[in-house]
Image (cartoon, rainbow, N blue to C red; front, top):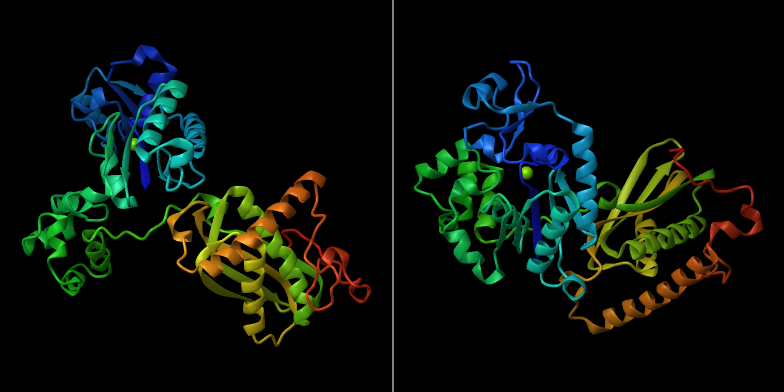
Length: 408
Ligand SMILES: [Mg+2]
């Protein structure tokens, strides 16, 4: 289940929270010159027809008693990041889409925080108590429905679309409410008699595609309640990676694998620390001449096991016809999911048990690393039986001291 959290009249509400005298008044945020436009307006000002992006002179005409305040972007950003921190208390999967808006995947958070609806209530309460601000929350099985839901009962709303009600909701949803349907698409669809999203489902996807181009396919999917876009946590968390510039170039695959093992362990530990799992494993190689390649592999079941990551990365290296020396090698993971997610459930018990065993080993290794402040236990290189970490290399490789850092 996905939550879409949208702050109500965010800039104006922050100003009111900072200065309670503004409560109940028409507040308009934006530059005061007549050439500026409205950046935000309180709901009181909106009653007079003041809207975002409206020229300020027009806003003043519509709402002469409006209090015009300058945009204090730094303050809004500060509050925004504090609110995002509140959201992250309930799920690691928070995707901020703008300064006052975020998606959250709360699948699997029930045992800890309650049903999605309860999580939404707790968030609203906490945001209001901590910052004196209200938000509207939509709860639904997909991102696009959650976004539509959050807009249905503004301000201070909470709208839940239960999985069982999705079909009915879509059947009656006016097409212009669907994110991405602009005025032109609206017109074209109206031209063939489509008013609700549900009606799109009745036509062959090809018809919609020839009418709207690429977006047509997406719209057909949405009409069936399909929206595969996952909640992607912000910034660095969209992928997790670890790489290293070697201090001398090499084309010895066996030696390169010792680096892969070390970096697979690093990224695996990073995933486990963040309580996420990954589906796609990418090998990155930069050759001595600075040409670069990546090779990816997507697993059936998301993993956080260092062993599974290493196996995949090692296979990618095996399959790559290496004909130039390598100066940098690394592993990165994308397609990230929360630790407890329905995607990880598997029908194949054997595979699951195998993973579970490695997960247990990983946890013990993590615990030891945490206790002693550094990785004390590493996997032995399968072929030589020696520790495979480049930290303790065989002597002949001594001059290949590795450096970790952003040199490349
Ligand atoms: Mg908003």
